[in-house]
Length: 200
Image (cartoon, rainbow, N blue to C red; front, side, top):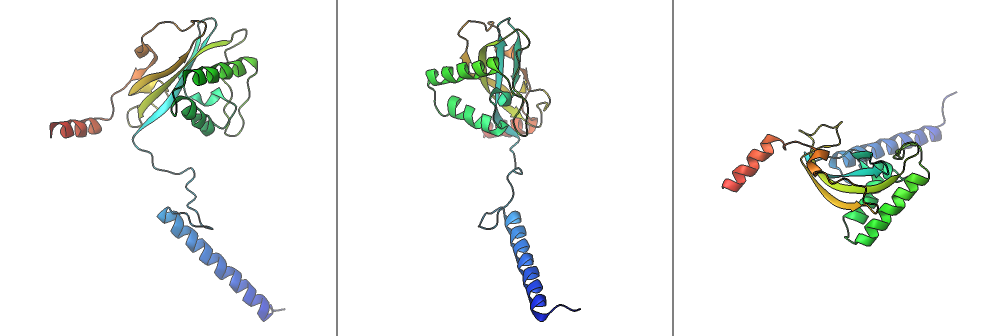
């Protein structure tokens, strides 16, 4: 039994509509533009510069042990990218010491009271270990060069700046910051360009 002319017309219309939509989607993806109902689908695909500013956190336990410096993603029970957004609002967008201290105190209390397991984009909480608790926290802004810094070593950076230290019990040992970091030089090509620019 052959399809009726109406069914043929409907199937051709659906095929043509789908083809036009897919062609429009491809064009928007290639041009990296969004115009409803098309989008670029570049949510997780974007170009990173060779150097970036990132955050690192170091936690200190009541017996002098430390966790980090490492990525701050396990500091809050949120998706890791939301943790970074929260920290930027608290430690970068404003400089109120009371707000920063209150945030640190509440984050440490949450970590000490009850941790959480990893799930989807949420990283598992930092753990002080059995019978220990976190008593201090340091937050750093670091610069990394993706060409020279080791991606597996979160202490491998080109520079580091202590942004805030929360240490109500005086638990943080006075040690030079350089001991926390494995400083590496930025990629030589960038250094040569900068030197040429200064000489001109």
